[in-house]
Amino acid sequence: MEPALAQLIGTLDATREAREALYVWFHQHPELSLQELQTASKIRSRLDAMQLPHMQVGETGTVCVLENGPGPVVAIRADIDGLPVQERSGKPYASTATQVDAVSGHQEHVAHACGHDIHIMGVLGALHAYAANRDSWSGTLVAVFQPAEEAYTGSRVMLANGIREAMPTPDVYLGQHVLPMLPGGSVGTHPGPFMSQSFSAQIEVWGKGSHGSMPDKGVDPILLASNIVTRLHTVVSREIEAKETAVLTVGAVHSGVKANVIPETAQLLVDTRAYTREVSDRLRSAIIRIVRGECVAAGSPREPEITFYDEYPLTDNNPVITSRVRDAFDAYFGDESVELGQVPASEDFSIIPDALGVPYTYWGLGGFADWENAPSNHSPTFAPDLQPTLDRAAEAMIVAAAAWLVDGN
Image 1 (cartoon, helix red, strand yellow):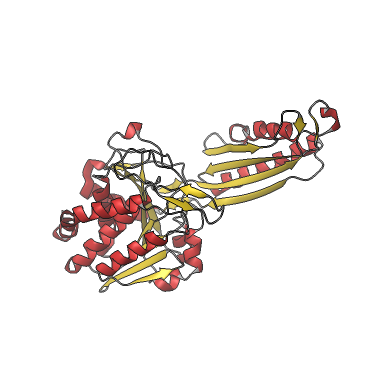
Image 2: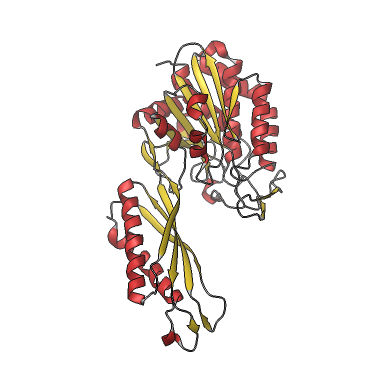
């Protein structure tokens, strides 16, 4: 390891106990999307303690710009929100937090069941290392603490509230996500399409209410919804080329309240994933065509209503940037730097760099020693091993940024 990078990484030994304590605080105080007031305040107080300048972007977004002479501008990003999940990880520091959801008005259990607390600490750990060792690098390090990744809105909120003005335009935008599908302590990269493009659809179809004993007097929306479900599940197997990857899931069907009443309406909720925009567009067209066709076939008295929402873009890693980060990871992590492959989950990470015209890469971070039996993200039992995950999250950010800030252009 070259001396400058060793100096940066060496800072982590002295800060480990404090970083672990701060991680536990974040883990025990998760907050729902766009309600991350305590989280944002804690991040900003930590930046103040390091005497680092920062700017509020939106109510809970934060940008810190650490300038250190001429050189590249590198942005590192962490998402900060939790999920409406009751944690059952068994960790001694498991979340017991609850919060009123601002949208539904319901009191919800909240947990960092996706690992965003690890992401926060990775960026804070890297910031501290660079701030404490200004003689070992040159350029500008930008830290972006982004709200509401889980609500599909955080990146757009920061763009709408002036993130362009809050920081110099980066030369590269970097991010990571703790994941269960690679060995604990490993970092996994992948050039090109990495995390899937996705959208959800809410479908409302109408029938004609009737007595259960007189189905001929009505139009059954439950039967109509059932036919739609069956037909939708043929789209991937019969309309998408075998060389492509796609997922279409009907996650909910709601209709009826009583056994002997044929209701008037049915609602379906659909989720999709794809690794190209073309395939995603085909899924969307097929949903519209099938729903409308089945409604006509059933004699539905009204046109269906189809609302598309929760739209995530494709995370398409720049090959040149990814190669540079992979080389840096290989040199530092050795055999623990691996090829991860495509991940079917989706992210809003790419929205900001795409809007700014900045190349990016996004990698995976192994969070579990027993990774073959690890719970998935969003599971109530998802809570990564404290170490080496916490150190590795900071190391990965330090090493990736150093590929520009230490090595230069």
